[in-house]
Length: 168
Image (cartoon, rainbow, N blue to C red; front, side, top):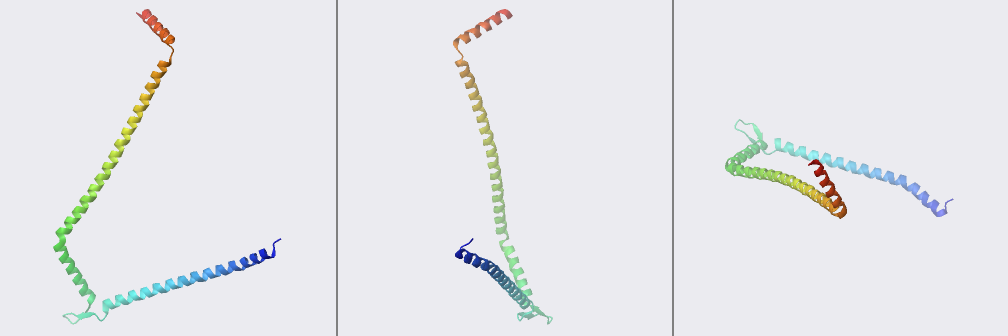
């Protein structure tokens, strides 16, 4: 059983959920319509600009009496300026490209050297590790030999002497 306050709270939430869902769908539809409207506006402006550039008031008359849009004249000018820059600044641009190429080449070589260095250092570390294992192994063997009582040493020496006498 729920108290009166809990029932009112539940009823309020039950009414609020559909309201919020409807409200969010309306807001989303509004955002979508505004996006479509701005896209249509941008498309219209783009088309208008293209049409005015191609056949707008800014056109000139050629020698044959034909009207030429300014865009073709502008393109000719752009190509002429580009040609001037290409001829005048060509050697400098070529040197800059060469410098960029050399820099990239040096960076590649440096990365390769770093890889080789890392590989050599890894091999060196592995060698040191194996050497330390061998050292510790020999040290452990020597310690084990030293821990054997002196009586056993004497017994071993006597057995070795007996074996040599029997063999010799």
